[in-house]
Length: 238
Image 1 (cartoon, rainbow, N blue to C red):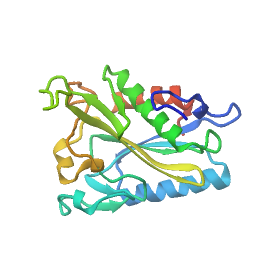
Image 2: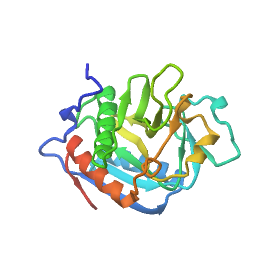
Image 3: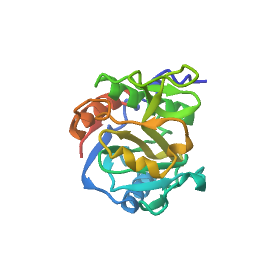
Image 4: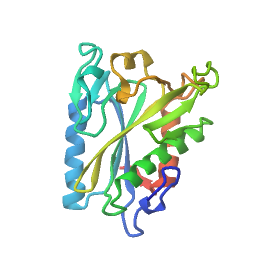
């Protein structure tokens, strides 16, 4: 079984496979458009051998509900639009200043292993943060990427406080992935207050800017691209 602290090189593309298409969308993309775009591309990857795609977007403020969402975790249902995402997981927030990367990869070309795929996504995020001198960490009982906050008082049990900086939520259709990751660069963190993010209580959320880094979205995209190529292989721009 793959340990989550390992990068599995089997997610590198086959030598005769095309590079992954890397697309950065300008402006804000509404959520129904994002879902329709993903559905169409995933079908093309499976049926027409289209290139795999990483699609980087920002959304207007909204909440999404995964297949395990608990209605009680939607604390302020009237605050922003709420969409059924059709992915795994629970409630999450998307909005300006958050880099959402939709990952459409063919695991039949790589490895048919969901656990290994999630570990590779975590490694991708952690590598991108490391290049900006931020230590992202995994937690066995919590999906996503976390940062320890030594600048805050420890918890009553003596353990350090931790904040979530990145979320992961995926779905597979005939072994092609949909949805992906969301990394907080400079979103309005108060917007997370309308939900229990990913159903996890007792922890906060943070961002690169909240951690004191004057990072732009373009800066982070460069780090994200470099780390992706380390974990998954080369990309090409359309």
